[in-house]
Length: 223
Image 1 (cartoon, rainbow, N blue to C red):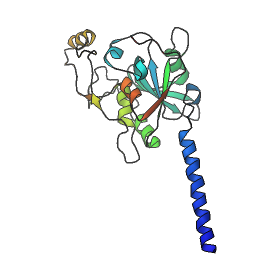
Image 2: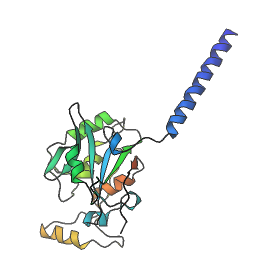
Image 3: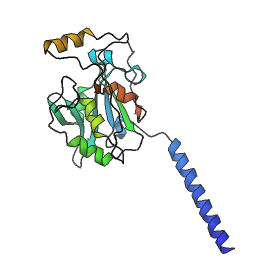
Image 4: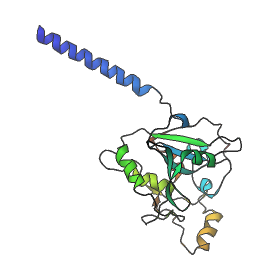
């Protein structure tokens, strides 16, 4: 009888735990600029199109042309980003000021990784790229790095495998034609367009099933 009572209690405890876990799993997390977690992705949304948004697709039709990683220290909050000349830590307030729209509100869609992710290792990998020159030509496997490449190369699961796969690079419009802006850009520097080369882009990351994205601004009308 005593053994049966112990088994019964254990089964009841397991049932309670399962119900609790299920309840938590279905609760929506508060994903926003006011509740940033270490490693959250901050997608910059544009109000008007540019060569990047014309060749890529953001979640829900948003014009996304940049992504940064939220990093918190004991003294300050930062956007860890490949931007400008190199990978750097930009004070969060400065980053948000830079991304304000016409109404003076930061146009940031916040993405949170919702699959298995070794965040400590991922952030250490991302920080190891600090100072790496920015890759203006979006080339694969070189010493320079661009914004979404920083995310793609840094985030790994607990087996050390990439959370985000590479995809074929896209410099074309919806009809498959390479955009004139990119043709002129690469021709000016006497370089080949890396169309189809393995890579990534911020819009694609925003649509990846590994990320849950939220934003509290009125979405700009897709063009």
